Length: 205
Image (cartoon, rainbow, N blue to C red; front, side, top):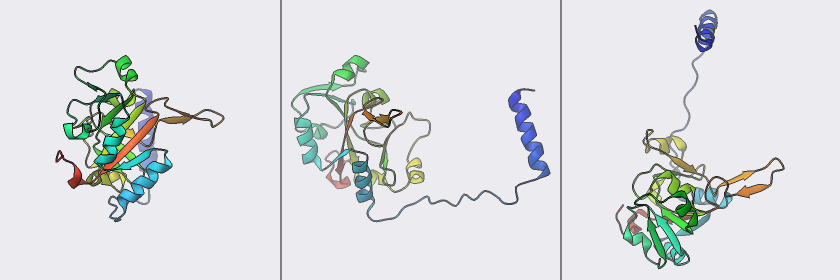
């Protein structure tokens, strides 16, 4: 018998002698129907030191400032209006050094959670592979209003648990033992979130 088997056997014996008096409650909230979810999401993003923009005109303005831009292979052409610099599509996959040399990466997302200010990518359409959004210093992420849900349980229903996922809550940051904030250690140091209405996307996505 392994140590694991022995521990589990002891637990079963203990529970058989004194079973739990009640079942563990699982009645937590799964849906948030507040009408101001996008506003809550923006509030969380700002608290995390992300920069929030609205609409494709704002996206075009951001891209006009970027010289070297990396994008997934399926980013719509309509998203790239305003960019006149060097465009690097991730096909064939860009090497880490090449990703490190770009000024920013532009992607979409799978879903966003208002309650926690979290953006989730799962390598689906317009998102690319994980390295594409982890290596560059700046991430510009397009989030549609209909991708914003209230609570984490809602977001999980939209995700494939088998897909590689990246969860983003603001720019990458950590603190040392003296609580000095250090940004960009394990992801982009700058996060720009561009919110668009579902009907405003010229790609129809």
